[in-house]
Image (cartoon, rainbow over all chains, first blue to last red; front, side, top):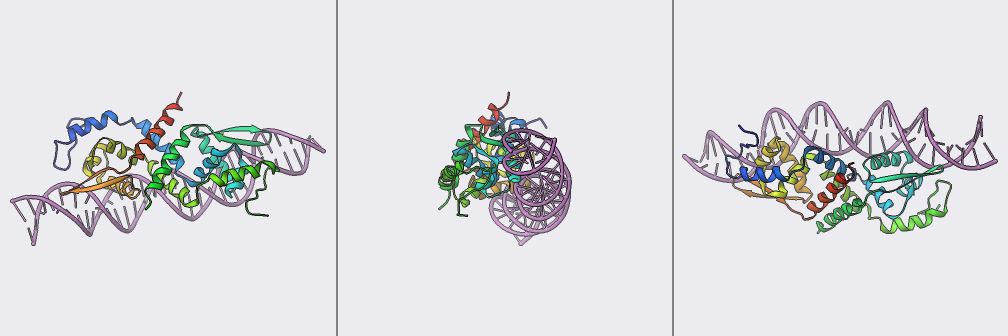
Length: 122
Length: 122
DNA sequence: TGAACATTTGAACAACTGTTCATATGTTCA
DNA sequence: TGAACATATGAACAGTTGTTCAAATGTTCA
């Protein structure tokens, strides 16, 4: 059986076209992996809340913890993740470290998400 | 200590403005939760791959399994999740069930994600 | 230098997630 | 009706994730 062939549903006439279409447009494995990793970042309400705070201003870890009512440690762990995926950047000023958004896509990704969430409700 | 006050960083002058700004714009807890739940859906490469296939055509479970090289069961489980979050809809035609996209935001959310992923690379 | 503060880090733990396997449901057609 | 096919579902399992706690690092200032 040649690579690219699919056997299922007892039908073979649809699959040829379908496979060509899909294989042509599907990103490679690495990109799909990175994409999923990126969205995984947004899939946690603590990180989402951190991002919403950073939409408004550059904020230090301690303030983030205060505003969100969480431990500095918990926030710091999440900031590390956000920083690793280049969504957020850090700037040290004396004892404090200030975090801010590092990507313009963040706002639009979240905006689209909100639209979906709001529109699907009755 | 009044509701809304924050004590940290030995600074109090920034926080007042900051809190007002943030509290005014931050969505409520329910929406933040829904938003995180939505992005969690995109945070899995199997589901992302399913969505990319559905970008091209309406496809039955069995074909999806064939194209993605996975079990029908695994695909079906994921389709259930995608359907529950209104990203995908199902249509039965005889023995087969065809799935297709149920939301216009999906494409733009993923497009923004791809831009981020592609642009941050060297 | 040493005390005080802000942040980071690592280990540990419970909670959650995706796949597999076996089985059930639903549909067609002889 | 019953056999064959397509899909859905539930339990179980390994792997992952977010928070907590304790401890380390980094910075300022007296």
